[in-house]
Length: 246
Image (tube, rainbow, N blue to C red; front, top):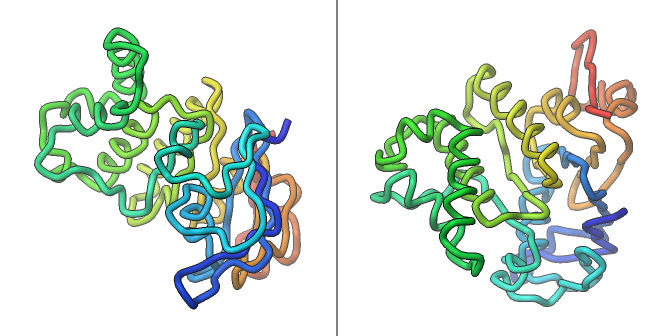
């Protein structure tokens, strides 16, 4: 079943058009990667899905509901949560309070929120150790953990993550990738913008390739890992890429 459908979407910033007839789908229960060079329009597409950038034309549907013109807060209510590039944590607030901010709109009571907080800390034990620490003083990897955990506190159906690995050591990226697979197995679909193509292909079921504001290639990640275009454009002389989780 298709959870998110982006159909012939155009958009951008004021008079600058960035997206040109973009088509993208996220299947329910899957991890979908969006890759491409810097400036290809990947972050703009996530902001457009979130309602932070207006759609000029085309249609965005989520769980068979048209969300094209919804305000960002209404899109959050449908179950789409956006973890932005740069993490955007609340400085001066503890890790625990940052996570609780992710649950600000929920109406299901404190017990359910407390259970989800325990789940987030179980996924990220280092956050539990630092739960009373100012989130802005965490390491880069810990800040990314905090941003993802804050997103989970909203109980998303779709978690969109912009640049999971940006500025992080390979070991931390491996740890985060493994945790994302746990989150996916717990029933959360994921759309990840990722600059590290090897990580993207290994993490995801499907991958979309973006160039100059357009989707130029898509398919199962295992198959794209062997595609000559992907290897020449993004993987260079690397001998082997496993690619794909299924």
